Amino acid sequence: MDGTVAIIGAGRVGACSAFALQIGGVGSEILLLDVDEKTLHGEALDLRHGASLASPQRIRAANFSDLAACDIIVVTAGVRRLPGESRLQLTGRNVALLQGIFSEIKGVGLRADAVLVVVTNPVDILTHVAATSGILPPERVIGTGTMLDTARFRSLLAEELDCEPTAVSALIIGEHGDTMVPVWSSVQVNGAPLTAFPQLDAKKREALFSKVKGAGNEINTLKGGSGFAIGLVVRDVVAAILSDSRATLPVSTVQDGAYGLRDVALSVPTVIGRAGAIMRIEMPLSPEERDALHKSASALRATVSGLPKR
Image (cartoon, rainbow, N blue to C red; front, side, top):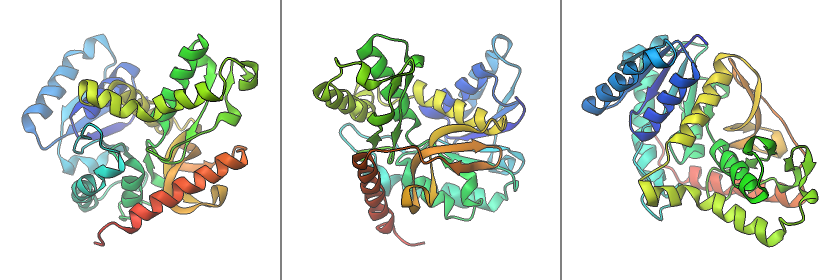
């Protein structure tokens, strides 16, 4: 799968994303950027050592000037979430950091057909900041959004129902954070609706969703932050863009009318490809789910409105 992918940030998430791209054969060249030169060159060297065992991508340390020729720029740089800290509490620290990075990117002058993928948390806020920064048209700025939450949701449902995770069709939409919305009304397991599994009653659903919401903080407490699962999320998003597969994924973009939402970045089912976010799919929601999605949007708008003006 041809294409040059740059990853800004060679920490845990950036390195895991690069590794997922490598073993998945996604992209013909992977560039790594980081302010920590020692870590940067170490990760690039480690990945190159596995080239004969994986796919034949070119992998190297790079700098901002190299971004001008890239197809996709993935931003994973950021400060880590502290134990017990919500994603939105990261806002003040990470917005300032990424605004500096976005200024550097804007100064380089990206290709008109490039796509920017935002991974750093709070991803919805930072996707909005990037999309309104003038780096690229808003439809070419995509955040990983609730893809990780969706993956966790499916995995935990599979564990509860003792089935393969790939047999579960389920979605989380809205904010990648405290106001995320589980779409229980559309959950299917091997094509069967959730009503076919009475053992998963309301109490168990609530407990399972609490695990999904708390998964990031749990992993952060146990090992300092997630890496493997979000790396696979990055792989799937980048693969969908480079292959122009028109995959429908719960990614974060600035909304333009789906579910009556505008001018806020959050996740709804979105068709993505080489042109970025191509269209949003308005899947049926229950009245409660729709209300929760709008509450999620309101919470995110309130945070964006409180950001310092530049």
